[in-house]
Image 1 (cartoon, rainbow, N blue to C red):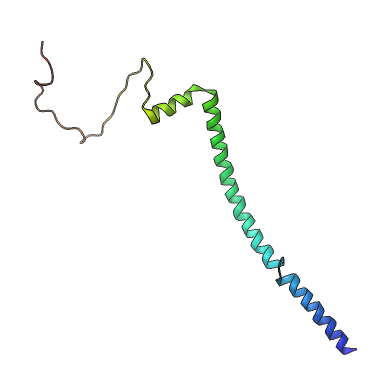
Image 2 (tube, one colour):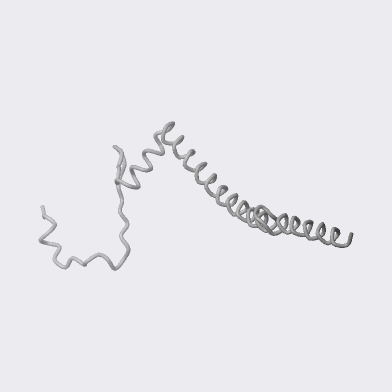
Length: 106
């Protein structure tokens, strides 16, 4: 009768080992939980990016202000009736010494 008890305990221990340490056990569950947390944070960043892109698409589709702004920024667009000013940092301009040759006199 003792040997039957030992065999059953050994069988129970081997089944418990597979449950705790085998494929699909606690260790795999912990790894999957960590990967789910990492994937959720990545998904949240992508959701925020998609919302920003959706808002930009709506702006481009609905209003001309966004189109004008992008054209001004990327293409140098100037509307009719506007005055264009360019601000150049000091030290980048060369000094003109002979102004009589460039400015006509009356």
